Amino acid sequence: MGSKVRFGVIAPLLTATLIFIMTALMGVWAAPDRSAALLRFTLFIVGTLLIVCIVYSARHKAEAAFGILGLICGILASLIAVYFILTVNWAEVGTHRLRLVQQIGLWIHYHTLDLSNLPSLHKNMTGGVLIILLPLGLSGIVWAWSRHHWFISVVAVVALLLGLFGLIMTVSRGAWLGLGLAIGYTIYFTWRLGPGSRSPLRWLVDLLMAAFTIAFPVGIFFSLKVPEFEVGPNIILDDLSTGRTKLWQDSLPLIQDYLFTGSGLGSTAMVYSSYVFLLHVPFLSHAHNLYLQIAIEQGLPGLIALAVMIIFTILGLINVYQQGNSLIRIYCVATFAMLIAMLGHGMVEAEIYVYFLLPIIFLPFGLALALLLGETSKQSMPWSDAAIRRANRFALLGSLAPFVAIIVLFLWPGAFAAFQANMGAVAQTRAELALYHWPEWPIQDELRRNAISYSIIGGIKFYERKEVKDILAYLKVICNIRDSVNLKRIVNLLPFFER
Image (tube, rainbow, N blue to C red; front, side, top):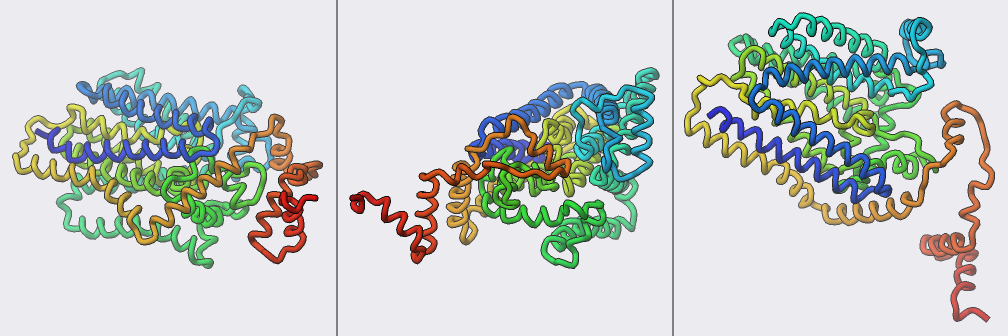
């Protein structure tokens, strides 16, 4: 009967995941570049298939399936770390903030292979992926050790240490932040569901953790709205040059413009350049915040769906932890740590979402579903019919929650006008940005990235064409009827004024 009670968590989680995928599909429709959007949506499909594969593999022998998956994640983390270290150009000025790390990287290149001519992984993306993979890799070591696979355990430990070393070498403060939050919240998770459940101090600890959790979004809100707090996140992240806070502030009008549909998958770079930075080439590909990034490309419905997925994933892990044996509890703790690490990293970075490693975002949700659907509970746990009825009601309410939130979004006062403005913004984006093509020889981008001054010759010839000037004349007269120069140009274009 435990599986029936768990249905109260499984149904909302599946529903929210489906809505999240549907908002991504909406992002394909809204995108000015359909080919790029379809490529990104393919990664969403791969993530969904990853969930299906994990759930299928853990149907009967969940402990072995999770153990093997943990070993795979540990090996994958070590390979990513090694590839990152070998392909980074450590001799490049300003590659990393810590001098010691740069010296270690140069020493490694001198004594091993120097593959810096190959495409390198971004340090923030590498750090974000590693903090997601490493907790499950640690659980794989525990499983191998419990099954007396000594050689596999040693190999897994070496892989885990390589992954940790790679995480240090990234010098990604966002990844370190996510790892620190994962460690702190995981300690609280295991204590609260273990000995802390009977502690007289549990309510005080709960209150402190709740306050700490609320402090993060409140701090980000104040950094966006209060000028005195604006520099805080930039100092913490050593980001005074780029300015994440300013980028977050610039993202809010874009979210408001594309509130219901999003600007489209893969459109952020040109949307930022065209409507925020007023540039004619892509500059930044993401908002340096996972939640703002999803809101920009998938709209608020996508963000609502993600929030529901997170809530019911945590509730499901609590349910399984309370019923499972010691090894299943370790898997629950590892999945919880992965989720918190991803969410913490997402507060300051969004590289995983915009690049080819996007399917890893679905990994914690797939593991939680597998734990919920697999044979992981103690068979002696009794469940009454009343508990099952409560679970069914909870499943219904949970499944309706994202739909209700989205309906409220559409029924909010002024929502119809905002939706019409959203549709107009999508039409404008399609009309303006669908004509853009990446340069075949991206020399201009390379000159800009290397701070080499240059001048563009013939860059405005498009606006010197007669038909373009005629259209601009109409638009200027609409804005200012007293513009005599452009009014005369329009009058001369009318057929009945021709001689």
